[in-house]
Length: 342
Image (cartoon, rainbow, N blue to C red; front, side, top):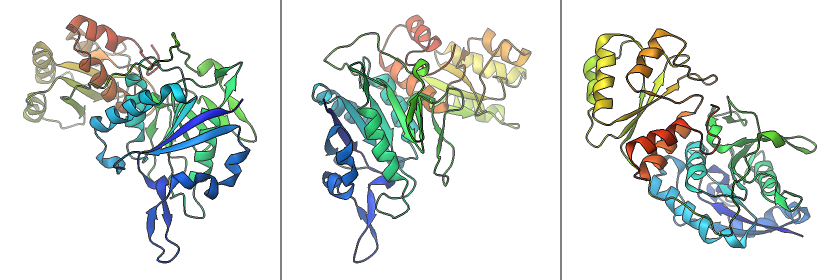
């Protein structure tokens, strides 16, 4: 039995090709996908294509765009076995991480992909990324989807979406998952890492989504020389609700009294501070050193090995639920979609 796949094009490099007459880049017509890539007919899938209106440069993506995408997937959820989302690479990890939280009871594949080189260019990486993403979205074993979670496929590797970050503006292997193994690696065959794949706790024909995302999130990256007045101004911004604090190493920060005092005052005003490491690999362990223990003592939350993208979008999602403070903090302390390793 064929799987039915919906491709959703949101914008990005993958959706461009060279005009035959002028050589300029023009939008690619994904409705003619079988004409451009006849080899797709050999896959055991039926494909429909939907282009978001308007398409966006990924640098301009907003939570409103995420809500529109989540609604689109929800509205088509019963009709398709899987979804492939084509997205610009610059903010793909943010959008894909957001979807992992917003699609609350997801039990079907949602595979994000894109390209570094336009799909209409001879040496494009988009062709393989697209074809393999479609194959993964349509893959089933024992009547169940192989990867029933939000994932990101790029350059022969499938990652859990909320574990990814864009690591290079030029390399074709543009994305990395530093702290979680690939869900699949692609060579002659697709080798799925079955123990790493997240499976749903409930399977429903109706997709439940959360489109109310909180604003007032700020990212503060520590560096030697950050001054008290600057930090205080950052933590006193009107409407501020939560801070992703990018600390050194295993979650360490200065022990200056003024630094601890400024953070403690912010927490006293109800601002949530979530500690993640600036390092690509590794995790926050605030109990290891005195500098981390001081943060723990004043109420800074541990972000473990979360990426910045996952931390920002998780805060948006959890704060958007408008729960009491104790329940909000409880949700932030535990993994909801496999976004960190406890």
